[in-house]
Image (cartoon, rainbow, N blue to C red; front, side, top):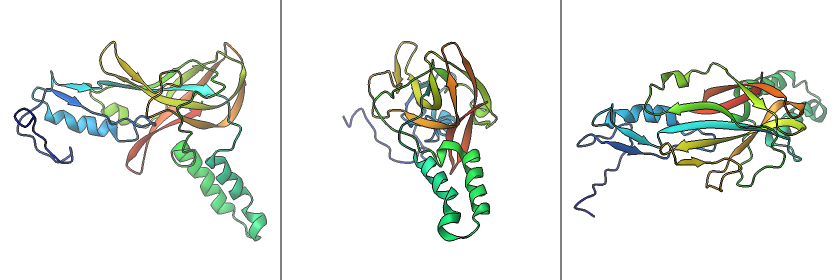
Length: 232
């Protein structure tokens, strides 16, 4: 297809195109929806359009969504780390209080992005307790500067089943057009991405009809954005 296709190799941040484009097809989505710097890359990619008002991204809209889930039977790596830190004094006879407080502070500040790497799976978790809650709804064609604001955004988990709320399953929905959506939901057909389960700092007994208030933040750590969800 040499007469119709020209392959240009290069990093999109510094490559130069011979002419503007009408459509940018991208796959910058991670299990943690924004962890591959989707927002900053899309914002930079707009400079390639022939006409910014008519150029189109595919997918053009990305939603970060979560559902409340029961805690898992096996401890996460985050819980294991915190448990080991609590036992350091007994092992070595040294006061590890400063180190212990730093670890706890890092957990609070960085949340699941550091200590709770998440449960990557293609199998729907047992114990989904709530309806979906949209954490972020990003239209790639709009000004996305405000999306990078790391201020807490309120949300509500509406409970559908009784149980112990211990975490959230986070996944994305990528809109190709108004009818076709690619979803990594636990209830959608399996994808190569799957979804991620992140633990909340505390568990909460819930029943149908309850509304659990949460906050989410889009934190930048190690030069990438990550979703953080906590009980309000």
